[in-house]
Length: 219
Image 1 (cartoon, rainbow, N blue to C red):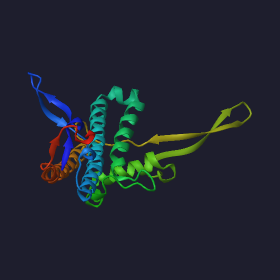
Image 2: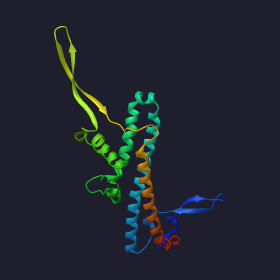
Image 3: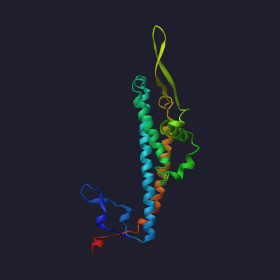
Image 4: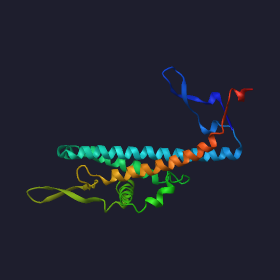
């Protein structure tokens, strides 16, 4: 296995300006076809894993912001759209890690789907995504709304005018400074980091055989 010097990019410098670390895409490594396919598979798995960790961090950050925001009673009643936005952003980021993006796509965290399926917080978040945010036809138990009719009162009778939706969007219920979703998401992040470390260790056993060459491909 070998990699050309030109495919290594400086990542970290000392105070003296000497490079101490490099980065490179795994596809730049020249190796046997079987090893190359394995590295490609590793890269795809890690990409999905790291994307999910990033999404989960976003979800956790949004819930922490929501928690701090809703502690203030005045804020809670004054700017409901902010609370709804933070809540929806957290749900969508979390749920995207466990759903297919299209017919030909895989579930990003397929390996962990069954493992987390019975977790109370996981089921709650996925339920909110499916019923409150994702599908209008399946949200009756999470969204309390009814069709009401507006009437105008006249001296002779009540005149019917137009229909309206009397709606109440259910948000996450919790006590101040206590949010089990945040704890759950952090636990999932730690679980994925363990998997990332496991993949990294096994991959490093392959990559340690790399020899650096200089402009070898141009000769």
